Image (tube, rainbow, N blue to C red):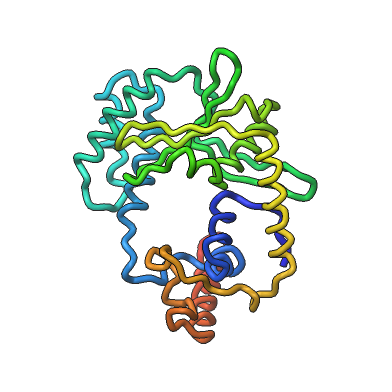
Amino acid sequence: MFIKGFSPSKLNTFTECEQKYLYKYVHYLPEEYNGKMSTDALQFGSYIHKVLEDGVEAKSEDELWEHAHRLRENYTFKDRPKDLEKCIKNFFKFNQNLSETVSTEMKFHVDVLKDLEINGIIDRVVIGETGKLLVIDYKTSKREKSKRDLYNDPQLMLYTAAISKLFEVKINDIIVAHYYPISGNLVTIRYLPSHIKSFLKKVDDKKWKIRKKKKTDFKPRINRFCDWCGYKELCPAYGGTNKMLEEALCASKSRKTSSPGK
């Protein structure tokens, strides 16, 4: 099965569950097969990301609130006024202390090894007076990761490799971070070049592993993410059948052929 490379979400999905990878990146099915799954956290996270993206140039908390009120109708989740207030106050204070922003919501698509490309979207890139770069990923979870967690975080390692290539800077001159607007905490890490090199080799190995697979080789992996999987009802580990998958594929194909421009 041919694959050229990964986005952070694609890589995480394969690591999390090969069956989910099959549904999402081979069959391209929508994540709508789990009636018990709540989308509140996802919607709130997307909302806060957009508020922070639009509010980078805000000169006051009131201006940030204006962005928040303007964007609210585009998202569906139960109101979390205390969390929203914390995000607004913490981000304004955090934002005032940052130097020049190079990019927000930066889309990238770059070759990091021969025959291995990576792509994705980086929330924010900031450049310091010395030319070193700070790469920020916003996280709206209340459960924060430690530096130890970030040491092997595939998303941040992919970001580091991409930024090094795109801006032609050394790995040592890149700091990557999770910023948690609810608490206001910034957790940072700087990787060694050897660490990124070793990681990319493992990513390349996964690419070849997928290339050798047939569709029947992708197996479910039961873990703590299952209850939040948008394909749980299709999964054979939870009673899903080939007939259910065929019906889902037919429904997906029907939607695509009937949509405008098709």
